Length: 330
Image (cartoon, rainbow, N blue to C red; front, side, top):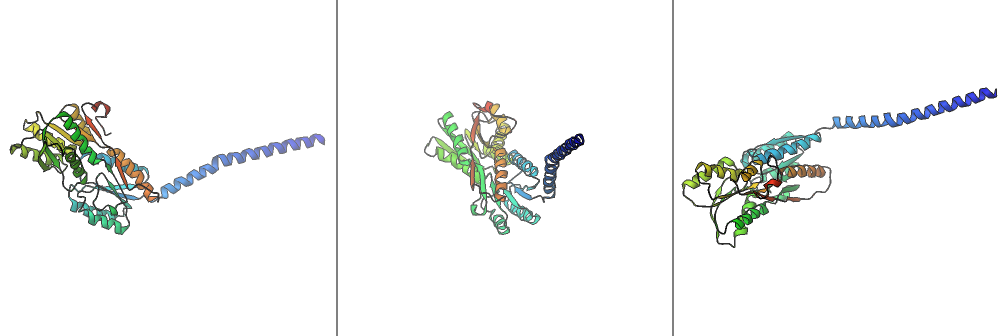
């Protein structure tokens, strides 16, 4: 009898231990799996948010790569980015923004063609309750935007002027600007303010390159045929500088002329390395895209974000070109 009781106790201990182990297994494996499955189901059932984006032009590697980075981040979050190219036409850009509002965007990344006449589109977004995230260049009516993130455009012009002044005791300067594009206007202003108290540096011509390679090339070609003399070119961006370079080479007039751009684009850096361009104030479009996306998601989640973010620029010349990735952006 006593022997039977011992066997029963032993059996009960085994059974109890088995139950405990089984419960541990259930809690360890099945419950987390259920939770994980629930999370996946919630993610799959989430309605993707539509983000809109429009840039002054997509005929520029800067905006192409910025947009690609932005799109990759947004799609990784299970959302959608739709973008439009107004091709330097503000009226068209306004219409595109109205259309995107009709498509049901929840937010807009905006790089305006004209920082003032974009206002009707800004007002439409504001009235629809759609936040506007201003990137690369400012808008005049900043009260309509949730935040702005852009390069230190003024200093980009300053850096080009300082480098020129180190290399030339005097200069006749040709500038390619773009009226209505605040970023380029600020770059030109930074350059002009830096040389303002130095009469030995004379601006002989300011022409509208519109930030486009082909336009800048045509403007430079016309200028050369008019016989205007200069020995320094400031392009409002790299495409402008590269367009000027192309026209100078076509007319066999490049010798002795220093050409500055602003972007630090792969094409610009190749020309700096080869000695055809003197320098370019480098922007960081991939960092701008990443920061803008992170701030946009924070804003939509109700978190506090800075209203004005400035990304520093660096002057790239032949002296420091080895520190940069020639094939990509900074």
